[in-house]
Length: 126
Image (cartoon, one colour):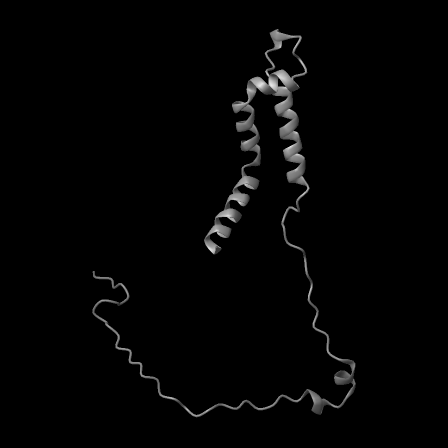
């Protein structure tokens, strides 16, 4: 189920990404039908429009729908850290920092042995 959902979402993202290319592919596959149904210049065969005017309209529509999406895709969020009024007005003892407490030392089973024969800085020989 999760794999099917992943394939579906990936396909939808690819369709959105390649929307203009899909419009051109649809035009190439159905050129004769588009010419018969939607071509404005049917009575002028010398122009050899073949439905390119309809393709241009579809591409403009695809571009306008793309421009409606936000450019960055992220909203600007501002986070402010504000101290409560009571903490500011009280004595400085309220702002005192508690001392740090550390637990007992734990020895880690780790040993490092440097290999100086391999890893060393380059040297200059004159």
